[in-house]
Length: 118
Image 1 (spheres, rainbow, N blue to C red):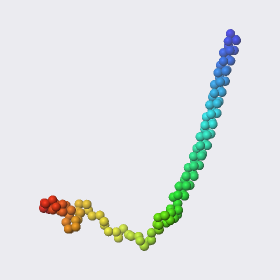
Image 2: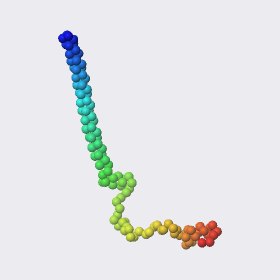
Image 3: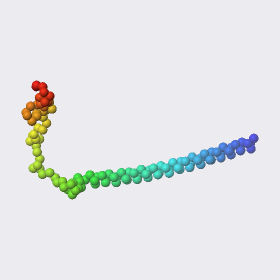
Image 4: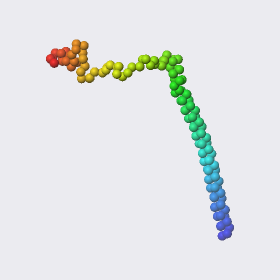
């Protein structure tokens, strides 16, 4: 009986030792994956910062102004060319009253072309 109990205790101890070894190796692998993810995250953040600096450089107004002058021939507007809103003519006439060349409304012209009277 004692011998059977010793064998049973040895088997239980062996199973627990194997389970502990497996848990330890899985925990180490998880730590390694976590460290790798953290380093990947740090690298991604570094790349994001590099891209933000690059975007800031590309959107620089002075740089864009110089490129517009160099490649498109654009120059800043002269302040004397500005027009006030009150100086602009009204370009849109009411939609229901379109004037034709003869001075009659478009509806009247359509009726006359169809042979009817207004």
